[in-house]
Structures are given as C-alpha cells and as structure tokens.
Image (cartoon, rainbow, N blue to C red):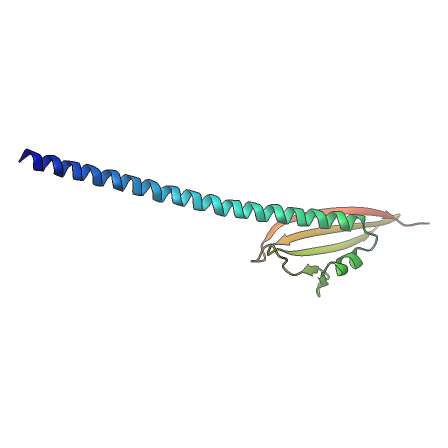
Length: 135
C-alpha cells in the first residue's frame, strides 16, 4: 500500500514539474517573439532615418531640388508635396519644399518624412538653406 502512495506522489510531482516547464517555455516564447518584433521595428526605423538623411543631404547640396526629386522617382501632388512610392523596404517618402523670400535672399526649407506601409511617419527631418540673391 505504501508503494502505491509513493508512486502517486511521484506522478503528481512529475506533473507539476512538467506544467512549470510548459509555463516557462510559453513565457519565453512570448518574450522572444516580442523581441523579434521590436528588432524589426528598430531596423525599419534605422532604414527610414538613413533614407531621410540621404535625401536631406542631397536636397541641401542641390541647386535645383525640384529636378532632383523628379529624377529620383518623386511625383508632385496637388498640394505641392512631393511623394515617392514604396521602395524595397516598404518605405515611402514625402518631401515638402517651401521658399521664404527675405530682403537679401531666399530661405529654402525642406521637410522630409519617411512613411511605413500604413502611411505612419516613422521619421521627419527638417532642414533649411539660405540662398543670397545677387544684387
């Protein structure tokens, strides 16, 4: 009789240990899945930052930003914003150019936004360049 009680206790203990490991495995699986998703979002944000910074640098150096945008696959929308469709990373770009005339020149403002597939802005960079008008 004592032998049967010991085997039943051992079986219960074994079931408790198995249940504990199943819970631990489930928790770890959720943690690793969340970490993978966070890593994907981080990679997408880094790609968006690189795209926006490259575009801002090229616009700053260009004497004809409109021509530069047209050469790089952007199309102008009705409100004057330049848009580029999604690239291989699933990112699209929106550029707003504004010229603010002053007494001695023009202040050119560039705003570059990189959007994900759901049209949410991942990153937005602003830059300005002053151009003097020759007298």
